[in-house]
Image 1 (cartoon, one colour):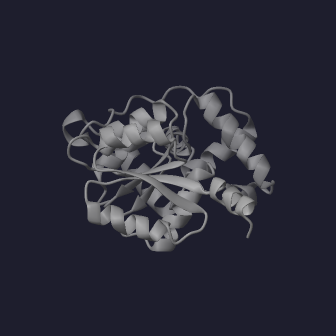
Image 2 (cartoon, rainbow, N blue to C red; image 1 turned 180 degrees about the horizontal axis):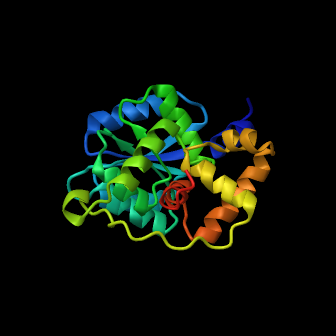
Image 3 (cartoon, rainbow, N blue to C red; image 1 turned 45 degrees about the vertical axis):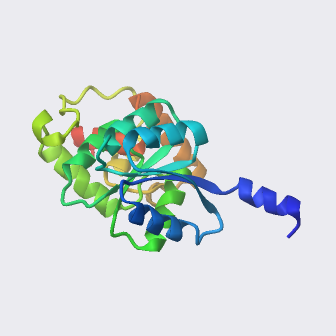
Length: 233
């Protein structure tokens, strides 16, 4: 491999910032991620404000964010990172239906992983979020969305989550876009939607992008919540 080829390979890597208040957890995550040639850990943070600062300074592709951190939680940090379009956020959770996850949905997290995820799942999740396919674990997505819609949270129990509001009217989605939105609500990935609708992957990506734009949301997860609220999934 020439020096030029090596530099190009480095430039193509998915860059990640790790945000977790336990140094041992960050070390473990780094060890897993850096086994992959296409992933590079470029920064670490032990709290939310530092995660935001790292995202702003380093502009990573993905921030792997712990949901609960003292000194500034992952939800507030996610909200700020997404609002400033600094990176995609992949949330780590223990998931006992963890109420923090509901706040993360509204904050704009692109996906969720269990802290107990296998190394391959972690790497696949990071790659999926970096490439705009925010549905990492469909079975987890469905459970989160079902709990979110079935049991709206209040300020005392949600720890910062935004209370559910009545579902607004859907904007003018085409019939195909409505089908795509329904699939998102069921936790389907782009590949699964393409197979279901018998269309190409690029076509699905275009439809998903149009749906997000028309719904005025930034992530597939937020679109999935809207699908659930409107009874599409």
